[in-house]
Length: 633
Ligand code: XCC
Ligand code: SF4
Image 1: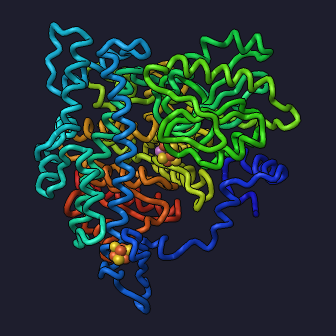
Image 2 (image 1 turned 135 degrees about the horizontal axis):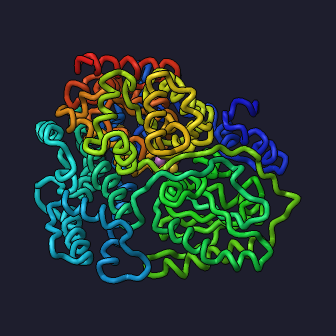
């Protein structure tokens, strides 16, 4: 395989070669072995929802045009999409629910976790209508948990409180008119699975409306709920300076990688890595070095300044360095192949969650009650493992980039307040109005082996900032941009003149010793809710709907079902959402048209599919300009 085609990340070719020399196959090789991939699956035209199938629809009109039960292309693709979005929403809601349980345990007096951000607690309490006056922290937390649990126990038709409390009125009215307001999030997930079983809904429009409803479940019972509660428990991010790429691994240190999504585990590993530093020194290391992969990497980067090791597609290559003493995982985006690869080195792979076990990995059960013991045990396992590291098998790449991150909405507002303490959003709005900032784009989501690793993220963003578009980012997109140096203040150089002037003004006012980076890291994938909050704040300020703003979202290299559900939420918010990988719905021209065209008139947002980064940038900029024109800007 031509190594230069795999990735634009400079560390990949050498590590890929090392893997090959050591006889280890990786995601890149397995992708090749899967070629050609099934055209029915790629276009969404395969149904396995009952055991009479699988049924396939011939997209060229020569073969069958209906499944055995009579389901057509549009039914099959719409049904498949709804199932995928439901699965994505389920993942995020389950994540948020785990954090909610910890919040409840805090109210009950657990010693494992506590409230770090009283301000955020009060702010969330206020949004939920909780009167905080004369109440203890514990009472506020208790009341908050009750209100949120009520959403999950709601047996009636009333919409989710957490969504109502956090959405602008215009959006609520639009959603109500379309009949897509979610009730109990768990019930919506159940109902969507029911609705897509054999012999149920055969109306593609009805199925797509349900898909939008599940997008809203994801946005509010998943993303927003998880972020808010995580901020309350672990603190709201503020700017941090750190580094990204596998060059952050250190030769003389115990290297631990946290991988997965939920900070309940990774925060504890950070805590115990610091506390057990002396034990590492006794074992001959200079200390303990922690780095993150995927979204849990983003979580501890944002709050603790922990460096990013790498993103989704290079998770195996991290182990190929031979320098990782232990990788500990919780949930989501964990390749099952890790166990086999870790077995080729001294690396210990540790699973922690009852729903993620991998044969070949060691399992250390992690619960709120055992959080501290389990984390100590895991860190000690890493120290032991360090002593077995084989220097002959170690190759640590030199490359790493400087990263300024930690841009929660609160941090952004604080930075802007240095320019206008009384009205912090005003400088941002003024610069959008004047055209110094043409618009704002969120690049989010994964890597996908179908796309040259990181390439789409980076090329798209370079085009955007050159054209004075401010970029905010989360997820593995954020990792890609971090590794490429786009979160280094020096990257402001690559921005257009207007944007650069704004970045410099904010940087100077905040004594950053340089401009603000042109790409603002806003966190993990659940932290897309931060982007939603920012959008709502700006829309409210201008007294318009989010759908009217000169903004867009993009998932250039997405792979996960979660990305589809996040994208659906963004569309429901009224945001045009670009996809750089063709979604598996194109087998039905009708479903494709609804998602990429008709949706706009109904809800304000739509999907925009474009697999060329330069054309995508042009399309996004054109969209932003059209929105500006409608606002008379
Ligand atoms: Fe997973 Fe969140 Fe996608 Fe990265 S971006 S591959 S979902 S880690 Ni969320
Ligand atoms: Fe075929 Fe219909 Fe069964 Fe799907 S539900 S597998 S289309 S018979």
